[in-house]
Length: 105
Image (tube, rainbow, N blue to C red; front, side, top):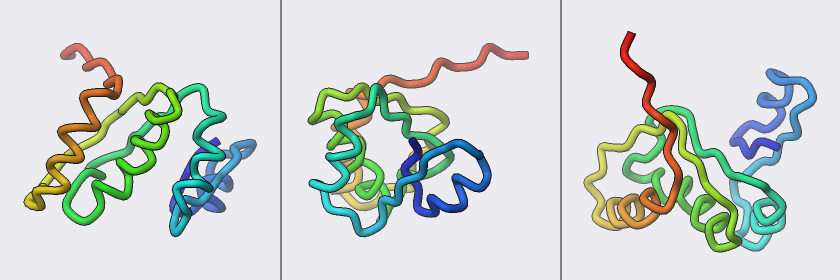
C-alpha cells in the first residue's frame, strides 16, 4: 500500500500497488490504514520543509502512536524557519529508523 497525494498516478506507475490518498483525510481515517501496516516508509526527497513538514510528520506520528515502526529513506529537511516545524522534525525523526548510508564509490 502506498499513501500518496496522487494515488491513481502511483498505481498506474506501479501495477499491483494499492494506493490510498492522504489529502484532507482525518487522523481517525488515516489511523484505520496505518494501524494495519507492518512498517511505514517515509521517503522521497526534500519533503520536510516549512509549511509541509507537519503534513508528512502527522502520518509518521500517527503510525508511531499505533506502534508501527517508521523507516525514513532519502528524506531531505529544510529550510525550516518555522519553530513549530523545527520542533516537530526534532521530536519525530529521532524515533524513526533511518536508511543506511551508501558506501562511497
